[in-house]
Image (cartoon, one colour):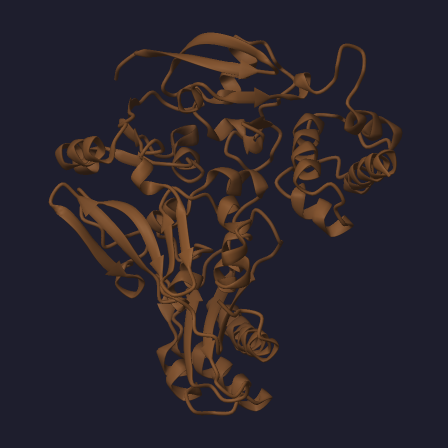
Length: 295
Length: 162
């Protein structure tokens, strides 16, 4: 049962932005409802005013071209992305993220924009989007601006969006033919669970052996999602042997800042990182060798 | 806080209803309390257990996490909408044949998830059925028979077509 609240249902983006400019933090934005309504059940969070943005056409749709990359409307559901060939075949790390959110029912309803704005360090789409060098377009009555994913999360459950800004779409750059990506979610069970840890890798290797560039993100390994920059620097120019990948895992484990929580201890999380960072690198390398992530 | 009611229209199991709902009323509450369709179960009320699963415009969703006002004009299928009179849906028959129903509380939601799974994937593997039903908890833990019942329905539908 939910407590009483008032509801705004804007029909156009202009109307929504105008209302949001006036109300700001007095009003809670919701789309799929799989986070917002859960937080309200049992009176856990009492929002007096909700704004349902599901009708805004400007936030819908997905456009993919191999040359320009992909533009994803913020209201796109996880399930819709999971079933798009371009996501599965080209942006594979994101496929591995969206297809592991909650359950089928959650994914049929929950949106990628909502997953981003919820901004938890365990969000399954966040690590892949950071590794894939995504950015978001946000808009207010004053205009639109682009925020790179690396600047989007100033703290846990916080985003860099201003009080009057809505997330409109997500952009991911075009892929190179000598690259591949992968995401590993480490959790107690396969569904309906949050990541104890996650890591996404976007790897470039021209000869299928040497790391020419790597973008590695870690989820639930710090108060926000983070890049494993020392690990990335270590890998550039090295042949990706088993020993090199193992060492990369140790560096990632050392540079992460995991906390102890009831889900698991800091020590355990550091050990898990040593295992899943090399594993994910190996998967990405294997995909490059097999040529499966070609745009 | 306002006590405003919103007029909505819902097509439930092929029949249109005009209803008055408050903003905080979930689709689950409206199905059970206004339309007396109590086959859809209320349990965790936060999208964890899947007992309230229905099809919304053909997609499986947990109706406890959907506001009734959000789905104005939509088509809903509940467990009551599957059979035809005394004739059960093949998936329901299969649950009976396989003894997949113990206390029965989770079964309406599991059958709705099963219907959605078989529509999207008519020939699922064992693992795909596990994944497709992962959002539905059965505390009697009779998952083995439940999965067999779904697989057997898919096999029979395949035989009937070939």
